[in-house]
Image (cartoon, rainbow over all chains, first blue to last red):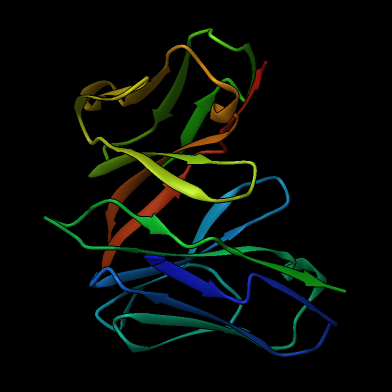
Length: 114
Length: 111
């Protein structure tokens, strides 16, 4: 039973399209994250939610909009896709204890914008 | 912002060899984690180690928070150890804890 699951695993789309990536965790964690990993494997946090509330919002274009319908789900919607959005997007979750804790990652969604 | 530097950037080992990976960070942190990203892209947490030493099988990690570095030791390396090893630090930010990853150490273990 996968702890943090993302769908789809692969996403190939044309420039200008709108797409969504879904993430669900069954660990009962309060905090969820979205990360972007570029072609050089560099990982950067995009957003962090705690109990459905946005707490970290890095300098991400506002074409990216996260939505957390409940604390087990954090979806990422991307409008007007650009070539530079091609990357692997990872969802993660954690249960903060005294502020910081182990993060568990999903398998990633490989987005290719043509 | 805080800088996280990992060394070496690339490492090739013969199976059975030992190695040490290093992570330096430029400011005090609340937490430090080591991750392994396997060749299929999956990120696995190895250690949650804001300070002290932990061991898990052939892997061990030490963080010296006062000197702002952490070390990951891999003993008797196996081909399945290949992949990218990331150090990630967490630091309190306005509103929450921000995670910053190093650029990683790419390890290839030859049979």
